[in-house]
Length: 402
Image 1 (spheres, rainbow, N blue to C red):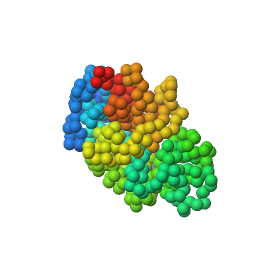
Image 2: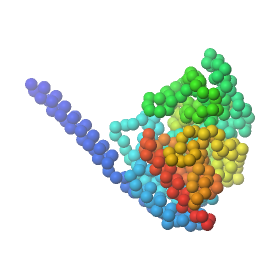
Image 3: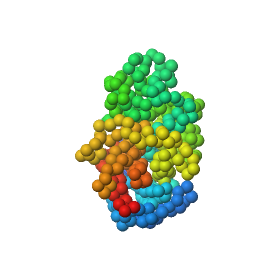
Image 4: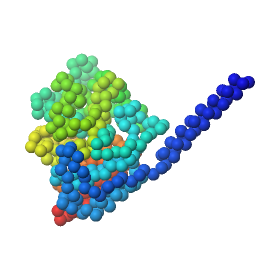
């Protein structure tokens, strides 16, 4: 009886402890996130290659921009940072505390007890599928350097070991089809578990991708496919003899003065090309500035100008609208999204890298404007709407008289 009493007491203690943890987490989830600080102050010069300016000097309605950012930085949405850049200078930024599920811990899977991070200009953040846009740029660099040829090259030509998978339909799938998510291969990235999930432990992504059936003629139908990005990355490493991390460091990040970053790998040590990049938001905006300057950073051509132009030009209609009431579908190019935004009654083209959870890099060439957001609301449809409206509002704050 005494032993039973001790076990019962231990069980009650353990149960009370677990209940306490659960209640603590509930309180943590419902507690309001502190508002961001210094939202409307000039960005700091921290020696990371950026010049800074003020909204007034950069052609913004400064009070309107301040009001927009204050709303974003004090709301309940789990937005971690917003950075606004124009004419080569940082105009506004804020960082705040927020919940996060980083891809570098359990591949970003849901965890029962999450933590909050105080984000700052020097904090790395998941880019999620903006990683794809970076891979697209590396393909353009590889083509210029002669490591890959025409975009009409069939993918399976790079994989003679996969000859058993060949068919006339699969032989028709080319580099361009993977870049534009129009391979025609069956692929589902909807509710979990889905085809993307296996990429976290897949050793041979090309075989995995081409084990899927062809269900549409290549180039005809957009179908979002992270496996295609993994195969593009694999082709980059095969044709260069270098890892994805070695390539992006030497050919993109070093020229852009981006020193602090990481690229998370899968269980086989293969970089997660479709989602694994982590970097500082201020460095993300450097990608936007380079794209606005036709592939140049400072006085160096980093990405071929023609490739940038193609990446920012609509290649295929996605069938998606944002917002759902929009008159035109979103477009897709070489791992970059595109659409239109209203600016004082004018419709302007934008291009963007999109990432799960609220990660965005928008550029509006006609306004010479780049905007980045980071957030932690993964798998949330609401955050998609919130950051898209935030982008539209910031665009509207650019003065018509500029």
